[in-house]
Length: 283
Image (cartoon, rainbow, N blue to C red; front, side):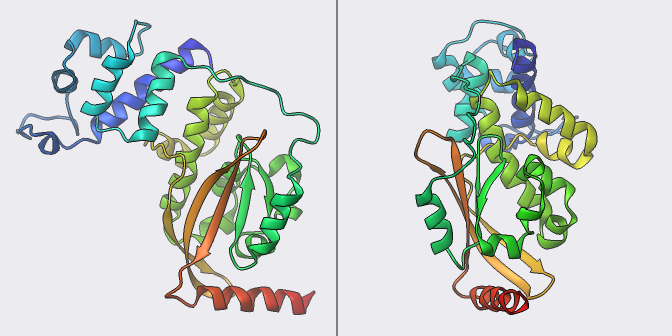
């Protein structure tokens, strides 16, 4: 990410987070003259204890000097959570992580991860790399989502599939909520790997090709490990409810494991067992 792109990302993020804050939440009157939602720039500056001019320059994406202390005050004024704060700091302080090109065969996951995937028989599980490229999955994931084996390796990007494959849109009852969760994770990678131009190129490509992606990306949600309740409407077994737990895998590769655990009070696990059994019989 070059400086221009980084500062534009910082500007967009600050504007969106400012617009999401209810003035009453921070003790300010709503008034009748507000033409746009959220706080005004001068109100953020006041809450953060900085000059309106300085904050305006920051939000405009000007290349100015910033300190972690001042950024902390701004992040508090904007009510940023920890993940959003890390993202904000990375952009504002131009934190650079070491960028290494994936090695030959690096997408091959370890035997221990393959064992974990097999053991999570009734929990659809997907493993992705830092580009959200799918590098591993189990049988449950293949039958609840789609058969990733039939998708060419270069097309197995989870973000792309969520926006392009009708199977995902038909499956998730609240598809927008479903997509936002993955974009929140993707944004953490985007902010962390500032030196990797792949992200900017991918975002530009997706924004031009899919208006839904552009709209949801502008929401600027950030989360390293969102936990969500997801409702699916599967074509063969009907309503299924899962808890989504996402976590990073320790090791040299920057991998993430997303596990969909059937909610116990529902019939989801039994439906999943019947689905896998029926597929096994067909085979």
